[in-house]
Length: 243
Image 1 (cartoon, rainbow, N blue to C red):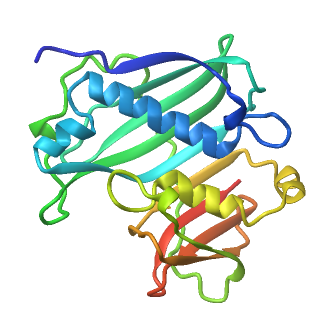
Image 2 (image 1 turned 180 degrees about the horizontal axis):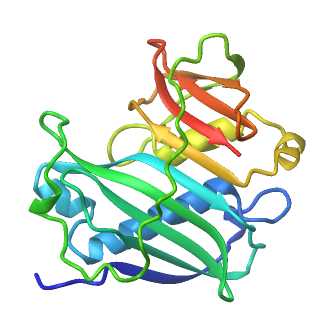
């Protein structure tokens, strides 16, 4: 394969199913659109889910940061662009931006790896990662939020039993559904008051249908709070810094 386009642009409409009670595009819908855009681009350059299955691999996302500048209204047209950065040995960065008439509404930086289905160890990206000019934008050098995994003494604020509708092709809870479950522990008025502008997430352990996860929170030095999701074994499976 010769050099491929490192990016993919999609013109999309904000549908009612993507919006909250104020007819604004929700944070989970933004993350869904990011995942959808990533999947479409990956398939077009030979590293989509079906391509990796043939190699005994599957994609995972370990870290994601969503920055929200503004949320579009229902029925507005937006432009979603996703692009990949040059890969490291076993991880790569994929970015995404949501624009309206040239204005950047939201931005995502994420770190991906491909695990082997037989032993869950990282596969070498050089074996299948496409060659490209990587010319759309430089890597975002802002580090991800550092969060400690010890949530002892943190305040419980909700729990969620994982259901069939939460499970993705990998057989475990889809990343965006951790965010849906977390935000669902707050009321509409609480979310409005929080006015989330940044969500820094780490996905640590896979969770499965029928499991119950508990959400705890603690104050954050540079944000509103840090949230941990605890599985039935008492281990942190998901963390988020809400800013």
